[in-house]
Image (cartoon, rainbow, N blue to C red):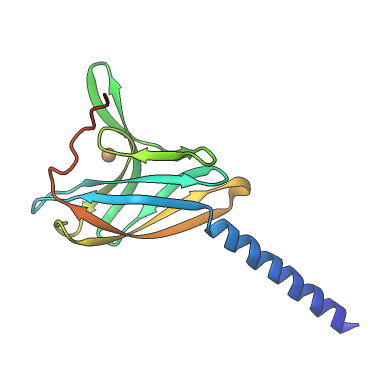
Length: 156
Ligand SMILES: [Cu+2]
């Protein structure tokens, strides 16, 4: 009875492929950008609007231009604005756009291997963990904007 077994295997493989495809489509990243750097600058931030259809966490990121990439938040400590790594990742509530922006959440690119100039496109990979620890990777080509682009946002 070899045939029924192999048919079953093919069906479950198809189901697995479908599952991973739908997982791949579940996070969208809008308007990503990276703040440009001056020569010798060691670190900069990447910003974007991230929406996870089913909800998840942005748990890590990587880029060939940076030795270390972390997910950070800016927060007041006393009266000093400090940033810290989100060691358990950034929560992405289902269907809600989460803003990574100057003064708030950002992807921190550190140990930069080169200067990032306006007009460059930098490859960045985001890793989002969804339900059941299913990991989705999102490959981006992120445009670099001038150093003083979009300073702290003032909300009116
Ligand atoms: Cu940071």
